[in-house]
Amino acid sequence: MKKKEGSMKINNIKKFINYSRTNSTNYLMLLSSIILFHVLSIFTAIIIPKIIVFFIEHNIKAIEIILSSIIVLQLIWFIFTSISNILKDKLKVHSNKIFLNAYADIGLYQTRKKYDEFIDAKNLNAIEGAKYGLWVSSDLSMRLEKVISSIIIIITSLVTISYFDIRLIFIPILIEIMLLPLYKKIRKIDIKTSKRILPENRAFSWYCRLIADTSYIKDIKLFLADDLVIKRYDELSNRIYKINQEASNKKGLILSSISFILQFAISIMLLLIVYHTENNTISDFILLFGVINASNYALNDIVTSISILKKTDILLQPFIDIIDSNFKEEEKKKIIKRDSHTIEFKNISFRYPNQTSYALNDISFKTNSTESIAIVGTNGAGKTTLVKLLCRFYKPESGEILFDGININQFNMDEWHRNISTLFQDFKLLPIKMSENIKESSYDENLFISPLLSDYFINPSGGEMQMMALLRAVQKKSPIYIFDEPTTNLDIMKEKEAMDLFKEHTKDQISIMISHRLSHTKSVDRIIVMDEGKIIEDGTHQSLIKKDSLYKKMYEKQIKRCK
View (tube, rainbow, N blue to C red):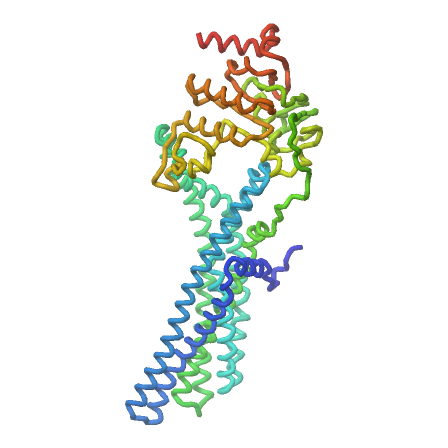
């Protein structure tokens, strides 16, 4: 249900405060203490000039009394201000902890999202929106402290002002009512700008990460792409600057008008005090001057802060949606380990989002743990798409995939992924310890695979990385193995070692290998040939080579090239 424009509800902020309390138990206590000492320091500062002038008015010349009073009051003010500042610093530390935990939760959300949902532009914008909402809410604690402190200051100030002339209390209230439309206008500009800038911020963040990403540095340097990257970086930076500048120009005149009205209100009130409160002393005038100033700025802080809090509440929505997400899957079937398993593709058809042509068209075949399969074909034939569906990165448009006769969507997602070992063409090893990537290897287990997290690291070659990824896959010990071009970066000796490793660990398990190197297909039990999203041939190496088949043509071309 859409909120009314004038609504004072800030439900997302309430949820964020509860989230903050969960992540930092002292959060509310710190906030309350800051408010108390902040208010006390302000009123101490107002009273000090009043006391000094009072001594002068009453011709009190005892220097000891005057100095001791001033020193005591200044010391009290110093203590209140110091405690307030110390607590504010502590709150910043707690807020930083909350901020880091929130970013971690966004990361968890990203990993828990289904693959096809994760790469959707709407989801990527939502993630960027959640990060931006967190950034905007970084001063939320201080803003809440300011609102509550200001309310206390206003109530106390109005009581003080009404003691001298009750009519004076209506002037600041009327002024702030007049300013409400201006604050509302500023909030609209801020919200519109922040939503408009999300795609640019997401792209800009990506280019910032790209410049610092070591995996891209060789290509950037060798293809002289640094100029292109910097150009895109500058273009986005200029677009973001232009959008922000337009918003700033619109807000500038409004903010100037607000300052003028506030100063004018203070001047009017002071004139009224001078002409209509003849019995008051100079010390009373100084006290009233301080109280009026404090109340006007407090009112301004309240209206400004409420406007900002409303904006923050709206911008926090993507993050609140994330922490409200329930990633727990309903109780689904678990995979029962047995000596033999089967996988069956039944009339599978699939199109990628925003595509009219089918990547897979009516695919059907069945395999089991007693046979190894190689899937071959031309580029774009649908080979990798097929295994992506098996990994449940996408759902088929029609048809179903069965594991032991059960639709794979009936299994818990984590349970399904625990039972699949994969090695994709574009594999990634995590930049963590070797032992955390691979259980058993000849490398030092404390060695890191990247300089990103430690000075004790290795920079492995492409072939070494692929062997590490292969070891990681076979050590998982799953009933299903999927290898997509597992030897592209390996030399002949390492290629043989990799294939022997593959055969050893996938024996009596379902194994599916995609490869353009048809020398590998001789040793598998079954070869499926794909073209334009369809299975066009199915058989052994010997049976396919005897036919006038696409497989035979591809194989013979590779043999000639090797010669």
